Image 1 (cartoon, rainbow, N blue to C red):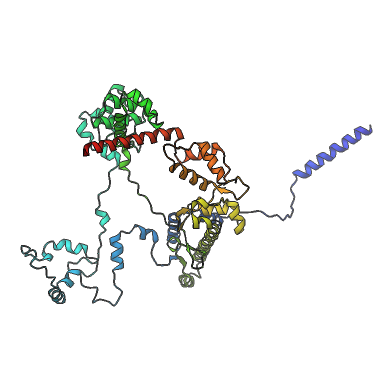
Image 2 (tube, helix red, strand yellow):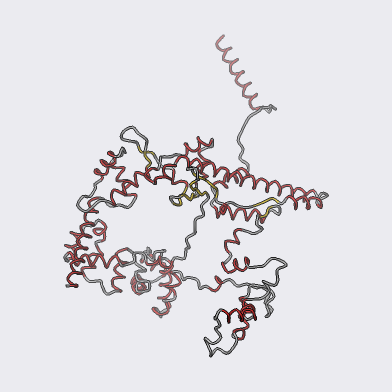
Length: 548
C-alpha cells in the first residue's frame, strides 16, 4: 500500500511539471549572441573582393547614393573603358580663359605666317617636295577633316564630337563563325547543311567533337552514314585538325593536309602513348624506321597544333594591378605601401546633405531617405578605410616574415601559415584568409599573390629550421635542370642530395612534387636526353657533310 501511494504521488508530480512546462509564462533573461547584419556581411565581402569587383561595387553604390561621389569626379569604370584617343582629347582640353593657344587647330597653326617664316629659316619648307599636289589639304576631304577635330568651335559646325578609333576596329572571328562561313562552299544540299551546323554547335573551344554520331543521327532523323559523310567533309575545313574526336585523329588530319600521312607516320600517330613515355625503341620497331627517320617524324609532329580551335579565342588577358608594393628603404628595411591605383577614391558630400536637408525638413519620408543615404555612405567609407588598414597589416607582417625571400630568393622562403600571421596581428585566421585572396604584392623579386607566401613546412634533417615546400620544389627543379644525360638523378638520388642539404623528405613526396611540376621520371628523361643527343649529333654531321 505504501509503495502504491508513492507511485501515485510521483505520477501526480510528473503531470504537474508537464502542465507547468506547457503553460505560458513571462520571464526576463539576459544573453549574448552574435548577429551578422547586412552591413557587416558586406564589410566581410569587401575584404575578399578583387580590384575590379571593388570598383564595380563602389560604382553601383555611387549610382544609388546621391551623397557619394568619386574624389576626381569621374567613374573609374568608365575611365578604364575609355579609349586612348578620347583620353588624350580630354587631357588636351584647355582651362577656361585660355583661348589663344587652344582655339585654333593644327592646320591653322601650321599655315600661319609665323610657321611659314620658321620653316624658311630652318630650311624645312616642303612645298616643292610633291609638286603635283597643287590642291590644298583642306580641300581633300572637308567633310572628314572636322570629324577628327577634338576642339570645339570647328569651322564646319561639328562642335567637339569625338570619335573613338576602337569603334572602327574589326572584331575577331570566333571558331563557329569561321566554320559557318565555309559551309556554303562545301555543302549544297539543305539537309547536309543542317547536319553540319549541328556538328559545329557541338565543338568545344579546342575544336574537338565529343558528340556520339549515332545519337546525333537519331536526333536529326537521319542515318549514321550521312552524319559520317558530312563529318569527313567538315574535317577538311580550316583550321586543319578541327572536328577531330581524339588527339591522334587531330594530328592525322593535319598530316593528311600536308601530304605527310604515310604508313610509318600513321603508326606513330596510333601509338602516341609510347611517344608520351619516350619509348623510342618500341616506336622504331612499330613504325619500321631507323633512328634518323624517327627523329624527322618527331620533328614533324612537333610542328602540328594539338588544339586548332584555340587560335580563335577572343578572351583578352587582364593586367594585374598589385594591391601592395614593396621596395627597399634607405635604412636597409622594406617600405610597404598600398598601391594608390588600387585604392578607391570615394567621398561623402556633407555640403550637399546639409543643403538638401534644409528643404526636406517638413517631409519625413525624404528626411529618412537622406539619413539612410548618409548612414550608408559613412559606413562605406569606414569599411573601405578598415579594408585598407587590414590589407596593410597583413602585407607588412608577410614582408617581415619573408624578409629572407626578398633578399636572397625562393631558396630562403620560410614556411608560413595563416595562424602565424593571425596571431601576430591579433586577427582571426578567416580574416587573414579573406585578405590574402586575389590580392597581389609587387616586390623586387616580381609580382606574387599573397597566397604564394603561405606554404607547408618540411622538417630539417639536423633538427634545424624547417624548410618551405615551395623552396624544396625549387631545389628539385634546379637539380633536374642541371643534370646531364650520363648522370641522371632518380628520386632516391634527389632524396639523398636533399638530406645532405639538411632537408628531410620522403621519396614519395619528391615524386609527388616532380609530377606536379610536369617533370617526367628519370627513365623517361634518359630516353629523351639520349634521343636529343643523337639528333644533335646527326644534325652536326649533316651540316659538316654539307659544308664538305
